[in-house]
Amino acid sequence: MKRTKIVHLVNADTAQGRVLLMGWVRTRRDARGFSFIEVNDGSCLKNIQVIADEKLHNYKKIRKLSTGSAVSVTGKLAESKGAGQKWEVIADGIEIISLAPESYPLQKKRHSDEFLRAIAHLRPRTNKYGAAFRVRSEMAFAIHKFFRDRGFRYIHTPILTGSDCEGAGNLFRVTALDLNRLPMQYGTVDYSKDFFGKEAKLTVSGQLEAEMLALALGDVYTFGPTFRAEDSNTRRHAAEFWMVEPEMAFCDLQGNMNLAEELVKYLCGFALDECRSDLELFARFVDKRLLTALERIVQSQFVRLPYREAVDILIRSGKRFEYPVRFGLDLQSEHEWYLTEEHFKKPVIVFDYPKAIKPFYMRVNDDGITVGAMDVLVPSIGEIIGGSQREERLDVLERRMEETGMRKEDYWWYLDARRYGSVPHSGFGLGFERLLMLVTGISNIRDVIPFPRTPKNIEF
Ligand code: 4AD
Ligand code: MG
Image 1 (cartoon, rainbow, N blue to C red):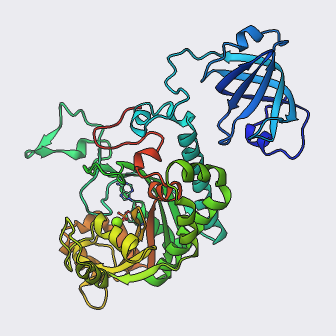
Image 2: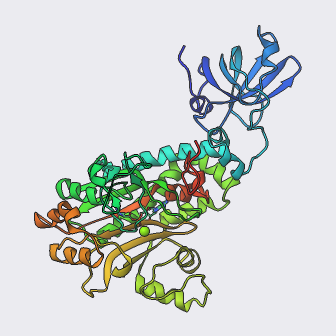
Image 3: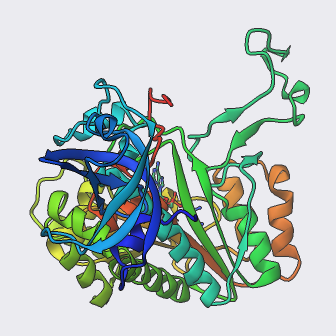
């Protein structure tokens, strides 16, 4: 007999006759002559209620089934007489696959997020985290669907790299050298002796390589893990996170902003349509306004705001911010929150940032002071997307690299793309975990990643 997933049972239209299901016991309740066992297999939020009659040959053992135990059940799907569920399973056989001892840490009461982080290997078995990781899977699918439906090609960019895309110096180094016996030359490490014959790092962004593919295939996107050694313990930074990075040839900043807005709306809409029951759980226990907030994003028109005007609004707000606001300084999260939550109360795309605070690859505007950069800010998260039109003019790009102190010989291939068939092109990076925080209402990035990596934390 083939195993049926509980998601198909709870949503069944008709009683399907005999079924086989496997899962874990959430609770057991005994009555006279029979027991109710709530079984969950992770395929959906809902449990299925199994009725175990005392006539079952191992009923004595069944009455010992504890929370967390694993069972295999055969029986008949029948309309439930109890409230709260449509179907239940009248068992004709219950095999106990394993019995969980009393020390099982996930008992019926609600546990704090902090406690559950310390048992990240078990927390996917709770309602909230099971839902979070199912939504994570659905949203990854939604990203592929969005881009494929629009003719984008999915590409893979390297995780090991020799370049520093963002120039922020927050790179993890990768080496095969013996750290206790480093080969030295003139007082510095001789990387020519290392595995790749030069310094290697974990990528902070697949953008530079994605550009090369966009200049060949047109519209592409990469979606993979990225790494940043940012020593800031905030609720929205992780050292390992996933980024979705589309890159489009023959596309300017306008087209880039249009795609970013369309993507964010699509993903919020997809979550509302396809992850409804999981989202309803978050709306009950995590963020009461979640569903309306997402609906509002889907229906809204994002504000498009030049950086210069954003600075003016912040100064005129009369708010006392912790960090100063002035043309030429980067916006901090408190400023992003003010703009999107308090002032506009909807998503805002800030564009044309000063070039001095942005990486070398962004296209210099005619004013010579700003670059064609854009950040999408959304309520409760702040920056969810960062992107730009790329500098396609060889001479301007070379000058920017000199200004920012980059070694041109290391980026010869990137410059080649401007020598041969260079065209205006644009792209952006969407932080996948920030998206998950948005669609679940979960406020800490550590709780949308199964095994988060943050400063001083690499357990599991
Ligand atoms: O704004 P960022 O740094 O942009 C880039 O890396 C570009 N090269 C992307 C591109 O144009 N292809 O990062 C993009 C997004 C941010 O908006 C944020 O959502 C997310 O990545 N992000 C992080 N998410 C979690 N933890 C971190 N430490 C993050 N740093 C950035
Ligand atoms: Mg950014």
